Length: 324
Image 1: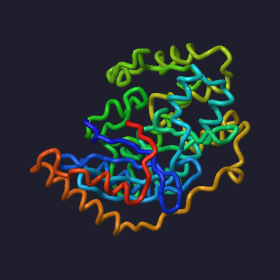
Image 2: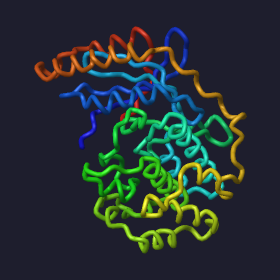
Image 3: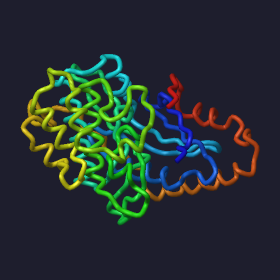
Image 4: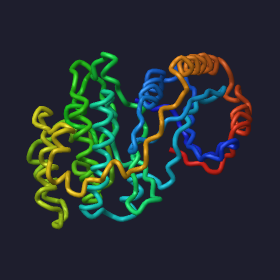
């Protein structure tokens, strides 16, 4: 499935001086509306120290823009690639923060992320131990809406076997699928490579679909020799191919290996207060974005002119740009 084009700009609010990140989502044919709405509505509900804070949304003739907390330390993929691999204590620290964020999503709001990966984790490096921030809720699903997860979404190297085999006719457990992706993330931090993909990063969905216990054993055997037996045991549980045999997030949080040097949440940065932009206002903006996307299918590419830049100049100074 083709994802809508996005770019993220680092900006500063002229009135308050606050640095923010602004994610611009291109208004294309039919706008991929369900994924965009899902990202905005689900992200708006989340307020946690390890989740990038949502601030507001606005629309321009060419883009829908999501204003978020600015996290300036890059993403976890860049961090791991720069180091080659991480020592177990540091990988566990990041893994703990990731699990705490997901437990909040699943237990408190029944929101599944469905695209956990190194690239969707940002780092605040202002602290001695970087603070992890989960981002990009474009594939997220709110189970309280009553919809059943049957769609194969996510990133091939990180998705679980049951998601890889998904054909749209059988539901899967989103928590267990997210747990698998967390396991892949932990493995990548420890080993500096994917557990079940070639080093050239080629997408081989069939390999994940047909994964066997022997493949799991082989991947675990390739972990660096300094990784502890307790950590390997944790990964072995997470990489249980039948979802029913896989631990829940609560099971992981109760594991002695996980609980070693667990950060004191009371000492972490306080989560942002939930923003005041209401659902009705967001719905109105999404409807306007949908209307504009339909107009754009009937207009030349320069339909919007330079309005986007004018809108930005009214509220903030652009100080950087990072395409994704």
